[in-house]
Length: 145
Image 1 (cartoon, one colour):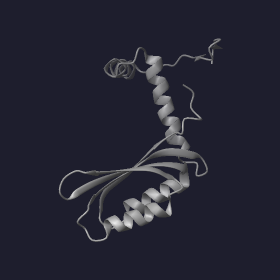
Image 2: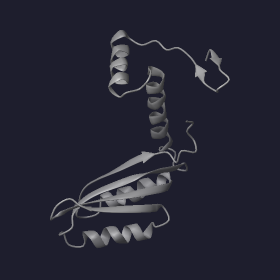
Image 3: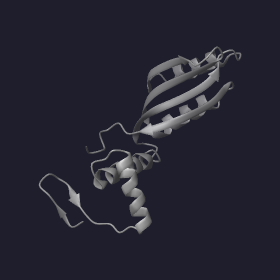
Image 4: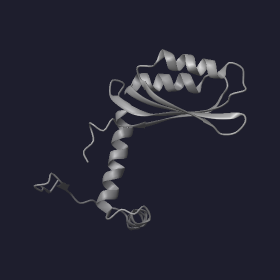
């Protein structure tokens, strides 16, 4: 680090291959960032969030997305039972009817990383679930603006 300004911003320089720098510049413009620094800061935050979920005792937040055919026998009951068993970390749910057969459930979760991953695995592996995914983010406490 070269310096730190009064606003708490660390300044440093990086070297990139020309093509990588050009791709970064294109992405920065396409996504509407005011400058490369903001784009890079978002990329660093994303990697920090991803890294934190690997520590079992860290508190994380996220969503578990489930897609299933509600006509399959017992799938809704099984998913509801699992959710009731973990009411302390499932903070909200949204149920969407995609068509006559397919439903999507979104579960907002917050808790220890190991617990969240275990619940997601259990829900995704439930008989009748066609697809599921855990998406992790931060609670926000550990990330600066």
